[in-house]
Image 1 (cartoon, rainbow, N blue to C red):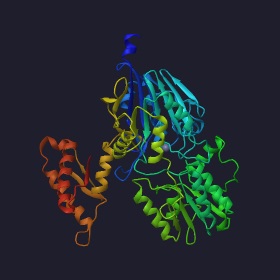
Image 2: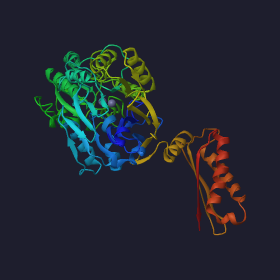
Image 3: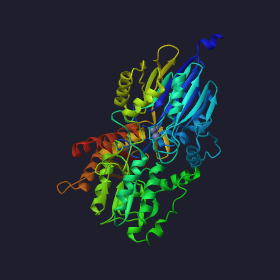
Image 4: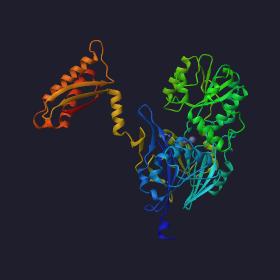
Amino acid sequence: MTKNQKDNELVFLPLGGSNEIGMNFNLYGYGPPDDRKWIVVDLGVTFGDQTTPGVEIILPDPEFIEDYADDILGIVLTHAHEDHIGAVAWLWPRLRAPLYATPFTAFLLREKLREAGLEDVEINEVDLGGSVQLGPFDIELLTLTHSIPEPNGLAIKTPLGVVLHTGDWKIDPDPLLGEPTDSDAIRRLGDEGVLAMVCDSTNLFVDGVAGSEADVRVALNKLIAGLKGKVAVACFASNVARMDSVIRAGQAAGRSVCLVGRSMHRMAAAASSVGFLKDIEPFVTDAEARHLNEDQILYLCTGSQGEGRAALSRIAEGTHPTVSLGAGDHCVFSSRVIPGNEIPIRNLQNKLSERGVRLYTERDHPGIHVSGHPCRDELKEMYQWARPQIAVPTHGERRHLEEHAAFAKDLQIAQTVAPRNGDMVRLAPGRAQIVDEVPAGRLYVDGGMVTPENGEALKERRHAAANGVLMVSLALDGRGRLVSGPQVRSLGLAGDADDPLDEILDELADEAERALKGVKGEALEIDDAIESAISRAVKKAAQRVWERRPVVETTVLRL
Ligand SMILES: [Zn+2]
Ligand SMILES: [Zn+2]
């Protein structure tokens, strides 16, 4: 054994997905601390919310690992959900490591890369149950079940032990499409000895089991068979088994199926590329659907989370170009409410109700949706199969990770470590522990630009949204004498009968002129000095009027 080998360590480093559900970005490192080789497992996004106006996509910040980009042996993608592959097209140019994915995931990823102008980036396609050798990492793919085709767990074999990285999973005895969970392979791995299991925590607080897609198929069949009028069903397009169930339920009820929404078409194409959705009747286009009797049509729609631009929201608004729903029609939500989306979903459902559309959700119609993540009984079973020495909870918020660690302890797992993004966990040699803390932030995609978390643009936009904007303009001659203005215009500020807005703006213009008079001497030749003096004065005056501080932008024009 050389000196170097003696120093070898195996570390796990989440840079996204630990302390949150979303944005998964996991790294494994092997080697001495000053010369590690890395693999990346998943590179996903998370989504903006009301606190990030105008920012829909959020990426993990790869700053730390970018410095070691040459030592990244590969990026292995477990499955095609956005929180696992969504950041690849954004961040690949900064990492430039070979990509590995199974065929369905590769199909969707290829499309994303093409859209980003990265069509030349090669994806190494790995068969289901196949393996990938990357330096000291010998990676075996394990077929699991989830809510998308081809969910893979990874058995990552290294000279210092085996890590079972579960990815997202549940135990579905009848997933409809694809194979059931390969429990034999996991048990075998357990027999050989698993050092650590890095495991999904999403449903840690839910007792029992997630339930099977096969049961959802029965429930949907029964529900849709009894409906008269137009039927719309909203579900995640990526859940191809669910799509398949809805399509078959529609067909059984004598309805033709029309896909509504871009991602439905995209997923249908990806699904048929790997042999799914084959023995069904052809879809009808929205144009064809309009000529059908309302009892003969089923719309399969995107937008179950109330996403503003998705098909269902536009249908609810009455702005969809080809699909309309009204009194006597039905909308089935074969989906769950993702935490954070409660308000947009409620708004969407109220708008549909307003139109007279009858709604069906998993709350009032249990069985029309099941989760894709393991509940407590399934987690217990997985621990019994794999029998790891170390439990590393991931894919959860802090409360999930802490509870998962306690749960693993109760199952007699010898060691538990629940890292936060940026915590480097040494899995071997020695007891598992956090040995380093590295930068692990977020990047916001803002109008197509990749910007720092809470960057200037977003801060200004938030401030403007809450406080309004005032624009002051004035023209001066070269010596600083007023030629025209000041003129004040506003955005997002109100007046009323006692204080009409145009009068307020005139007063603010007077305030600006007074501020200009206060600028003396050489400062009169400096635009910046004049602009900031005026902005300051107008902001102060505005605060007296509205009891808030609008954004004030002053522009001096020299004539
Ligand atoms: Zn997933
Ligand atoms: Zn996930």
